Length: 199
Image 1 (cartoon, rainbow, N blue to C red):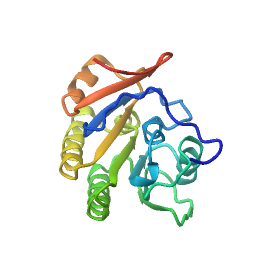
Image 2: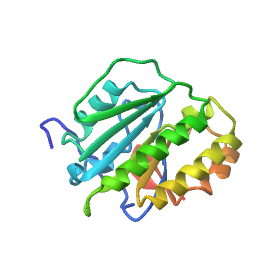
Image 3: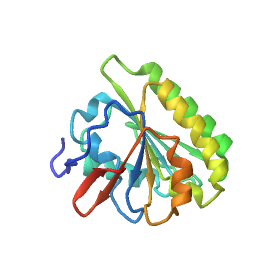
């Protein structure tokens, strides 16, 4: 881990869980799902970040600050953001133009996920950070998001990967959470005391 990188602490052990709801405020500058990745051997993980709000350079900066060591393979998919011309020898960057294009986003994620799973070594783990479902819900309705996530969570399981889906806990009513929660294997939430498993 590079000097200055901050490892996460107290994150629940979810290594056997495929699809995880991760409740953390969207205004947080840190990327919450990087915290468990910083705790052990990030260089053995193949990481794909799906971002609706951050440019690729900001994702890479967050990784360098929170984790430090490069992943075995790094990928970033930006959704609904302008072209920046960002290039990196360590991170493959692709773009989906419209945040409401669930079909295009689904195809891109499926392609990238399959590619990572195919190239993962015996000890390499494929991890996806979906930043964020809250932002996605701002561009389309709950039922379309449900169908999109139903397909994505299935593909994550089939690939033997793990995906963290970020929700802003203050942005959703109980009905929305209850509707989507059935798709996931578990959920965690960050509060003033740290990370806890959400019941």
